[in-house]
Image (cartoon, helix red, strand yellow):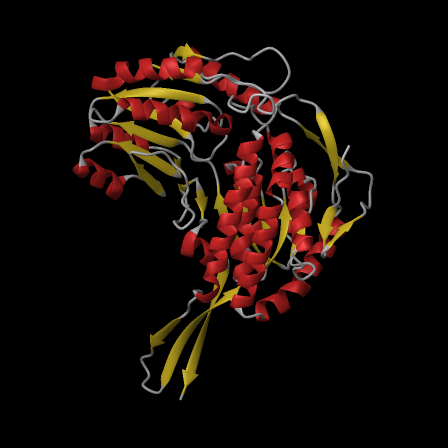
Length: 474
């Protein structure tokens, strides 16, 4: 069994207690390793190390910070296979997908390194003739980064790269479900020779995570996770008025108009719904189909969902992999059973497979209503409810009549309807004739209960800054 240690102050440290966190392979259900559970005292050490490193880091010219990120990106690229192996084992992804996630993270880190010469302030005219106003951007200080299980390496980079380029230090808590890839990532941090304490990576219990997030030195908490987790983070932020940045639940609606390419829609729906077993924040979660094309599209989806195989991707890379845990599978299956009790028609899937691992088949539900739980609540699994509509305005209204507002999709060739959706959809992202993919030069930000703040692009980078207004008297 491989041995892991928390990364604090630039060093891998011996655990101070015997408390550990078991890590399971979701494709088999077996515990394959255990990781140390950091103590509250270790969190204090990490935060103090981050505070010391951050002051000197912030004084560095941004171009130096950019060079450091590029060096780290090169090291990550060199070790992409090793990180990918750890990620595949802990997540159930194929080795190719896991390694691809690391490479995408490398590209994202290089993108943020390019902001080194583009972090801008403003010069503002004053009402007084003999003074000038300057608005400067400054780092927040120490950022607590809470990482989800579904894309643990990409999200790790998504948080630490903009934090570091803008002059902050970070303390990182990986998901207890997928922590081993983060420790291999930490080996790359050590090799990159960043200032000791600039990046700290620790696994811990929920209580210790709260102790970390409520330390007075923490200026910002960034989380990708569930709505309930986001609510807890908001409570943590209250302790010291720390800045929250939250990417929370999603319930992506897809509207399919009569002029849509149904073959392209069916192919894209299957790929989007079964990627990582549906455990993607922007995955298709509800499908609104115009009555005139409903039956034709449903037949295509039923055939493709029925044919999609699932299994252990270490031996069958083309299969759909498992859900993250038995708890997740039980929750998904219970939602499907309740949907059927409410009147939904099970077209395919909807059963718990025999054997090891946390697998669940692609599941298609027709005859759904907009008021059903399966349409209103995030499933986070390979389950798709289909709703019929007769009028585009009605579909658009249903798509927006929701607690979530992360991503949305419309398939149509009618530019007037495209513009109507662009002006009216209540979501942070709208994709036309394609499925969500979070371009990292854009801005990934949710409306409503889908979050506060956002990631990616210029605006995501600026989330990690605060402003200082300087008034210059002549």
